[in-house]
Image (cartoon, rainbow, N blue to C red; front, side, top):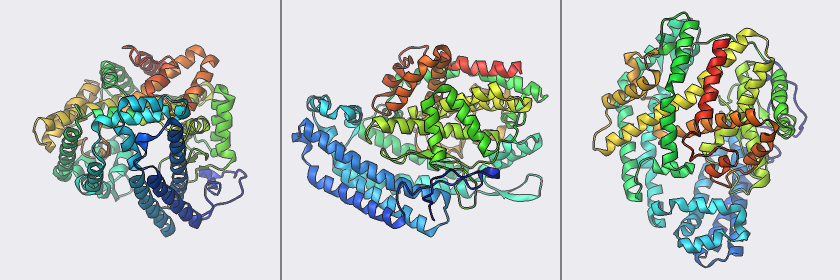
Length: 600
């Protein structure tokens, strides 16, 4: 793979032809990446030699010096690993890229093993001694980082025990995750979408649920669940084993609830999450209202599951230069600073937008490193949806940029509970601008529909997934095996609460739990999306109220990165997580979207 040193913007043809990023500002090439990787690994080993066993006697200036070195190591390894990952993401077939990626994986594991002692020694300090250190002005910029590590103190074992558990993970955990992944990723069935039977993966079948042809949508879902049926025992057993193992680890680490590890990672109290989920369930009628309205648009008495994402309206095409213009106008209305940050992505060739063979699908924004600028990958297909995707990733980009300017490498990043707030907020900025300027009525209808259903999928559906997980863990904790029938019953009951009598659920949908990777990879992962989306809607409601007065506070929130807990960061913007009604503005925004759709 080659990278250009010419940073001039590239004109875009159809489907963003020629819009490739320039990675040369990160690392000069493959050999330099290997050199920097080895250098970072050697620094990690030297850090271990210098500081192992020293933390208990360290003073505040000494801790500040150690943190600064730790941040530099983290930053350097992040830069080179990001470079390698970015290379591979646009050419997954390259042998050189695969070899580089493998080298990065090995080096990061070795570096993690070398540096693990620091966290463990810090966690082991008596609380009074730790407070004396993290309250010292010399470590003020990383105070929250240090405090956050100690949340896990009651649940952390000795270093030999932690190493042992890390060594057992590939066999006890990863093997079951790999089995699940192999079954679901290799599952292919013949399906005729109009051009004769062709092999269809799970993702390809699911893509048909947005097709205008109702019969095609129905047949695609029926084919999917018929295909999953023979594998239900294997998929359920994988999940049952993982849940059982996690519950055993919880007992070993003295967690009171299976959700506690996730709450600690997200820095959210369990009672805040519980109130949020309860509030979501109380507002399921907003979705029922939309489903009934959509049934009327489609000329149906009631939606069936395969109608849920049926297209409403039709997007006009948007080429890449127009997409940039729309983004500039959307962000420019909000803040000149945000506009400048977004513009730099384009001007410095930090976007790779052209779809091409060997490039991974989807989209992401990579933070890269604290002393480097973030990069964006997307696959631009001249669709209006691509504008929203671009806005979403640029929202991440403005967060990474502002946080890196103000925070250390240890304190710049946030957990997922906050990470999706800036991206969703940026989407709302783009959506409002498009609704204010778009003249094509079909595109306007499609925009509103996509926005409503996107919010429902994030807030309501992810709550359904969380409730399903809660019941599955409770069942397993009581000594019951998670069989396909038991999982199917839980799944169907929780979905029925969401859809009510507004959507008819087919019997085959009982297997809807079986292919969702989040349950397998990270428990209770999905509620963070609910939190982030509702928090964003609440913030956007405040922006509507305060206008320009809100902008400075919001940019300060982005610049704070992970230097405070979510409650503190959001509290500065008027979102009080202890307020029982904190989520009401978010639901009011969702209701407003439905009303806008009904008004045409």
